[in-house]
Length: 276
Image (cartoon, rainbow, N blue to C red; front, side):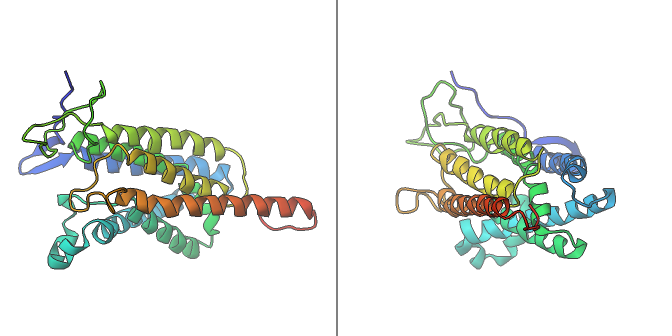
């Protein structure tokens, strides 16, 4: 007997309008992000008052949505959107990419860094310990929507996703890969990064750890997640999510090595006064 994921993606109706759980998850994640950033900023010595945090969150929201949407268009379904360019703005039909959202957030942090005259690394390493909670809520939203389901499986906890394609005319149980990702990319990653953020670390270490661990967790979780139908397995082996995660892992390892090497060189030269 397998659990059927037939949860209602709509939280409440207001006449013809509807409030969907997925949208609520975004709202909760950014609200929670505001409070956590407000708590963490003075602890990490980042000069942001409450108004500055609000403005920073607005930059992040724009980065997430613009980057996430454009990333999906470019990475996952470019031929379709080249034929139907008007559909690029139809975000209500779904289609967001984490990797595109990450690029959008990096651009947003860089722009806000320049505007507020706050070092990029200080802002970046203020955001990444908080980001996994947003990822957790987003994956829960995917689960409630009954989307991004896993590959067919006979494990005891496999689930039925009614919207998933039939196999030989039959609905088959699948991995609840959204919950795997919520656990790894969300809760586990948050616990690690939040712990690291409680003390001053070499600049770049927390950011590099985020890139390397998220990329690794995502690469692993993709073995249980059904690839996007329009792409399938690239080269018959890997998914687009895995391909996009490999640069994250490599860049993350490189940033960690740079941060540790920089710390070591500073420790060996006590006259050096650069930021740590």
